[in-house]
Image (cartoon, rainbow, N blue to C red; front, side):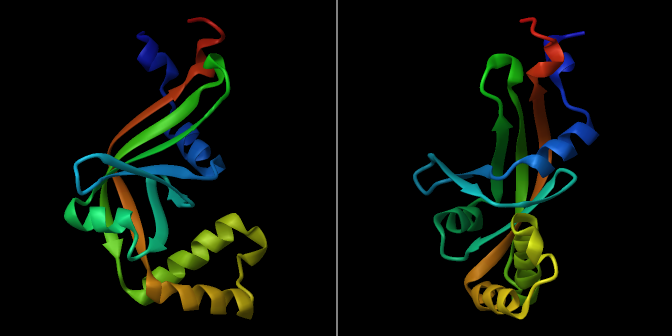
Length: 155
C-alpha cells in the first residue's frame, strides 16, 4: 500500500474533520490570475461546504468570473500530527435573500451554538445582513485528504 493510501481519510473521518474545524481557506482566481485566499466560517454537509459572505467581496467577484474554488482545512503542529483536506470545487452563488438568511442562521448556529434557535435579536441581525450577502455552496469535483497520524510515527 502506498503512503498516499495509508494517510487518506475515510468519508466518516473527513466528515468529522470538517465538522471539527473552525475556518476553511478559500482560494479563488483573482482578476490578474493569481490566487486570492480568504478564510471563511462554513457549514459542512458531508463534503459539500456552504458559507455566506458580503456580495461585494473580491471572492464573490472572482467567482462570478470563474465559479471554481479550492478549499483547504488543516491542523497539526508536527509532521506526525498533520491532517487536512483540499477540495477542488464548483461554486454556486446564491442571491435569494430568503435562502441567504437561512444560511446565515445555519452559520450562526454552528459558531454560536446557543443561537441554534435564534432569538428575536439574532433573527433581526441575520435578516438585516442577508440583503448585503450571498450564499456560497462549494461542491467538490475532487477531494484530497491526509492524516499523518495513520503512519504511527514512521516516515
